[in-house]
Image 1: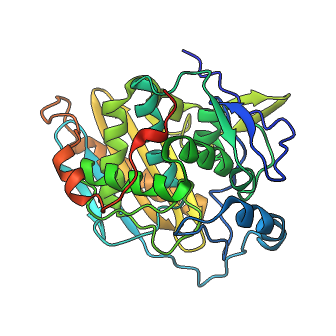
Image 2 (image 1 turned 45 degrees about the horizontal axis):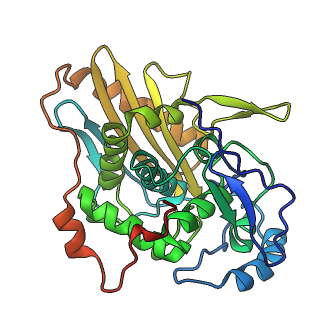
Length: 335
């Protein structure tokens, strides 16, 4: 089933109004490369204020060039999805910044809304000035593929506003969903993963989310395996360089900010075995990928071939207990 939503930023008249688009959307990223100093607001910011500063932010944020002393905090974990056994872990419960791994949860909530019938594949969504001003916005890609392959920041905010009303309220919903899944060490304040001190996670939590999104939305998870797609005569490649280059890798997401380092959640299936591995805090794309390759090679021989552990499921009572007073509901989603 094709998600033909087109975040067709048709020359957005974003001077203050909203342009209508469809869920198949997207924008561009290198949000994975959220620039040093680029900050997403932890609290709700008015769209007008956000849009006003967007042009200046875009000019100011240049991709940093790392020196030899660049060492973001490292963490890693490998989980056998068949048995639930942890095959490797290092600093797995220490707080880290997720960067664009955040979009895994953004997509989790979007998939949930689609399956619940709250969205249709041609549901029109509004592009606010704030969403259009996300850093950077250069291409109009197809939505889910844009979020997965090019880590589109503007598309993430459009989804957040459609579901939560504001990106800040959507962050509360994301955090509640994390708690429902048992992700006790994760807090979200934005939908894209752009830098925010309050936005934290752990390697263990990201492995859990990487398993959960496959268990809960197998029909939509396949988008994470998209190696590339064509749009307007150009081929756009997935940031996950392991796809098509490491046997059995079928997803899922990369992430980068200066504070987080180079992050990757990877899912690998071989001969009935299935592992989900996480590397956080790599010092470069190449070194992160090399570390992930090593972890896959070292751990997959010990993985089980029979499924003996239940699927990752949500515990709604736990989510409700962790929801702050006055937290938003999903009432903003179109019916």
